[in-house]
Amino acid sequence: MEAGFKSLVVMILCIIALVIMIMKLKIHPFFTLIIVAVVGAIGFGFPLQDVFSTVTGGFGGTIGNIGIVIVLGCTIGVVLEDTGGALVLANSILKLVGRKRSKLAMALTGYLVSIPVFSDSAIVIMSPVARALSARGGIPLVALLGALNAGILATHTMVPPTPGPIAAAGTLGADLGFMIILGLITSAAYTAAASAWCSSKHMLTKYPELAKVEHVETALGDDFTLSSPDGRPLPSAWIAFGSILVPVILICINSFGSLMIAEDSPALPYLGFIGNPIFALFIGVLISLLMDKERLTWDQCYAWFSDAVDKSGFIVLATGAAGAFGAVLKASGVGTYLGELIAQTPLPAVFVPFLISVLLSVANGSATVALMTGSAIVLPLMPSLGLSPVIAALAIAAGSSFFYHANASHFWVVLKSNGDLPMSEGYELCSVATAIGSVAAMAAVWIMSIFLHV
Image (cartoon, rainbow, N blue to C red; front, side, top):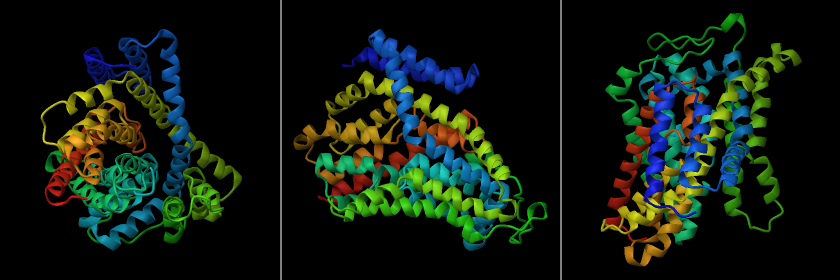
């Protein structure tokens, strides 16, 4: 449907209502998101017969994409924590990089993992490591989780073969090789800036809490000697790391293999199967069960799985509700309307695609949607902008995760997969950090636009 100024007002009122209902009135986020989605659809002028179909379509589509992945990822996390595998992971990282460089280690981990792995999946997979590292190293969770999230979102939005950057590059005719190389540079700027914010004095003073992880005690000084929880032997570091790295490797094989293998190759369906996040994480679950062979019984497995389903239930529902609200905003056309308004302003050329993407991101809560829709809007403007396709695509990518907030499924996955963090902390950890990271990435793109014409 076509949007106008009224749609912009409705969107702003919806976002304000979300914040007030969740933070001030203490209404459960699931109900808040669904209520705002329904009322917003009516406010946008949807035909009444389309209101609930749009809401349920967005809800079901989001859960269909990420729900099973969240449950499987939570299962690995539950087993890691209960068996002491999380302690082994954190201790190994601390011994390797040292306490002072643990935040850098998390940022680099997110930066690398998210190139082939979808951002929500990456957060679910890696959050147990960040929590255990916080508890073991005595480091505020906000710093480690912020660094991890910064790295994940940076490469997720800017470096192929993630679907969003590939779609933008394809729409604008950008060279994929240059997109990867320059995307790694701009995403490094994003990661550094967002990580610095989450490790700032302001954040560490306001949110000094360490993660609470069962069987994990804070190491004293540089003594990382381990003691077995409850007298049980600790799992092998190889198995603990394998439960996380094997799924990542399988997904990587599919992502990069599909780029290098011919489209008619009979190997592609097999790569797609073993590299699907559901299959890859299921293998990770099976590996995680080997961490405590002495307790590996049907009853214990049932207890782990039951705990994982209980813990992941709200994450799945909140993610689906955010998808419902995002679907309403997308169908309203308000993002496209905002993009067209920006395109008509006398801004320096390189900032036009960036701001279009920023508005799409804030309106839709999806970097992939911002990249796909933004590139479609920018394509007819390319002759007048005079930008190279790579620079235009990177400018869109830089703005595609700007200020992730309550309408983004990723926002809720970050909060709810890390001990149900308060929404106020989520806004500073996720929303403000992504805004800072986006601006830093755009600064890098702007400098590139001066010297490079690729």
